[in-house]
Image 1 (cartoon, one colour):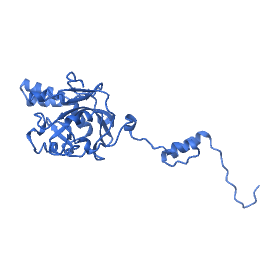
Image 2: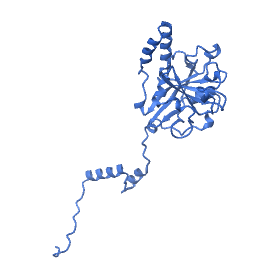
Image 3: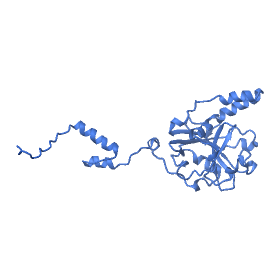
Length: 278
C-alpha cells in the first residue's frame, strides 16, 4: 500500500527468451555489445570477417614486395600462378601467364622505348596495360630491373570475389567479328582476325573484369589500394607450353615454352592442347 501523493513504483515485466534473443541480435548488429556471459563475451571479441576473399581463400596474403618482381620474367611468370589480383571488391586468381624477356622477338620491348612500350622498361612490379586490336585491355606485370624491358602477360584468371564484375569462360562476344567483316573483305584476313579474337578472348576478360584502361600503366602493384598483387596459395602442379599468337617472332621464340598455367583448372585460354606438365 502506498500513501497518498507518493510515487507509484514502476513495474518490471519479465521478457520472454525470444524477446531477449531479438534484443541481443539488434545490439550485435548495431555494434553495441554488452556481454552477459563468458561465451558471449568471447564471441563478441572475435573480428568480423566481412571480406568474401577470406572465406574463399583462407591463405590470402598481403601485397607482394617490390623485390618479388625484380627478377627475370621467365622466373617470375610461374611464381605469379596462384597469386591474386585485387581492385576494390574484385579479386582474381592468376591461372595462366606468358613471359616476355629482353632480346625476345615477341616482346613489345623489341622496338625500344616508345610512347606505348615505355612502361615495359619501368621498374619491376608496375603494371603495363595496352590496347589489343583496338578492343581489349591487356594486363602485364613488368619484370626485372628498370630499363631491362621485360614483362609477364596475365592470360587468364579465376574469379574469387566481386564476380558480378567478372565473366565466365563461355561468355563470348562476337561484336569484334562483325566489325572485322566490314573492315576486311579478304576471307584469309577475316579468319586471322577470328583466330586471334578467340585466342585473346580469355585474357581480355581480365582487363574487363578489373575495369582497366591504359591509364593503369606504370601503376605500382606492390602498394596498397588501387590495383595490387597479393600473395596466394601455390598451385600443386604447373603446365608449360609455347606462347600464343606470336607467329611473327623468330622460330626459337615461337617454340620457347614460356607459357605457364595451373594444371587442372578450367580457367585456361585456348589453345590448351599445346600445354604439357612441367
